[in-house]
Image (cartoon, rainbow, N blue to C red; front, side, top):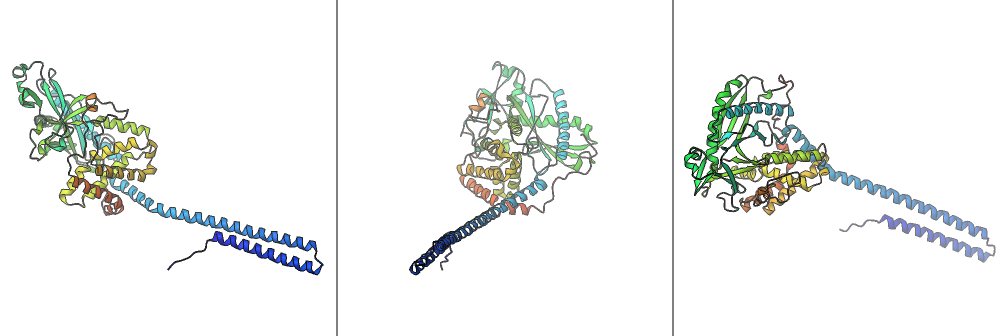
Length: 497
């Protein structure tokens, strides 16, 4: 059944014209009647004309008044409609803010104490290791580098995990010659962007005379060259840290219980505070990573490649990872100085990681691990870096959080659909001006962080990512019954650790 509605604009115009026509006809008839009687009076005709003009003016005013009222009502309806559209967006924002405050945001007080306690113990280990070493082998440089989310201000859930690079030194007369692995020829896709490191002596003949012990302990031979083995360096590093821990353990026995464990070839220092020395009694895990400085704050890191199960995984112990943590921290600090005081870029990364973790609990075991691998913290951070240089800096104000989160999801969705998320430093010919990289890394083969993953997996992750954005309120409400992992302590007995 067709429903017809009256166009009020046309209706009132027709009414005005109709009344004016009727009145003109009435005046004309009166004039003709007066002329026939011979007693017509020009004054009466003039009064009728004036009355006609007054009536038309009244009708015109009524028409204008109705138009104004109609326009006001239309604007009111339009604003109400816009308000109805914005209401769901505001509800999502409020829900996201509540989730962030109660389940994501860490207490700066607790995080600061944890970092200070970790620094004190690691510094003690390094000091002992530097004092008791021989110059004929790998030695401690004497410092350590704090890396990872806890030091980049985007840690989530609990301040219980820390990553520390421990720089090592080669014997002074030996020279490191790092080489990039050939693109596409790595035994395992995850090794894309890794490096091999040849060790050169002043004279080849000196290997047998002077450096035989070093070669046996830290190198593998490949043809006529010696390659530094990440597996052998890790093995020595584990032994060295254990000896250092045995020396300093008594210094901290009243404060905490310290143990050393190896999990998947990763060296983990576990710290369990005694009494209330560290508020909230947080058990901390510190991953210690041996590294060699290549220059300009770039490090080669020993990776536990041996834990990778792959039929073609041979000679993995000669591969080293490349770490750009100092450049990442420099870029973030520069952006923080340029962006609004309440910039939300790190907040976006924290929320994305938290949603990823919550959503992974709804998947089956295998896909859950694949989901977290594709959307690893490093991949999410890399995607954020590209967004940070793509969107205007002033657009990162916290009031625009939902817009930036939508951009974040859409960018990740496009990356997954195109099977392409390029490394932000390796092979990047146009890095931000604030970043200065050695020439060899600028000219390195480009590294796609999504290369090697099956296309079906990337499609499935893309679908679940889009679904995660749509179902975000439901996912957050499912976690509403979780208690906050870290709470602000009411009092603290130790202002400094």
